[in-house]
Image 1: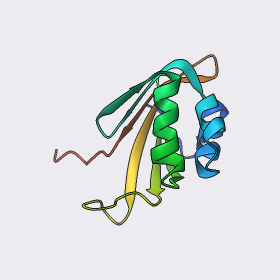
Image 2 (image 1 turned 90 degrees about the vertical axis):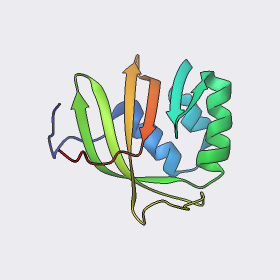
Image 3 (image 1 turned 45 degrees about the vertical axis):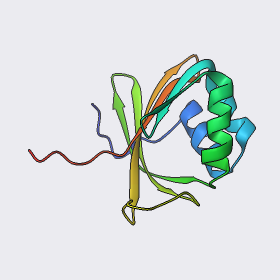
Amino acid sequence: MTKDPALTVSGVVADHIAAVNGFDEDAIVATFAPDALVNDAHREFWGAEAIRRWVAKEMVGDHVTIEVTEVLDHHGQMIVRGRYDGDFDKTNLPDELILTNYFTIRDEKIESLFVIRNTPADY
């Protein structure tokens, strides 16, 4: 894993985050491959139509924004940590919600995106 403080989001991942922050449903969906997989909050969304419904309700609908806090490269997989905010239910969530996004990219399209709220290991 490369932990380079100068590493920034680029390409389709940068386009994806900009579209999320711009609440642009079509632009967000356009960053995904037609048969992509999103796993968010332990739920799977397979394919463009399921991803569009997720984007419409939970990203654009909840006015989600992502402020990138860290970018890592792990053997070609882009890992982006970000501070999430929006109009979603924040019950039992920390005041500062940091989620880790694991992107798999092929041909400048997102093939898979896993969004996880990680917790530090005890050891």
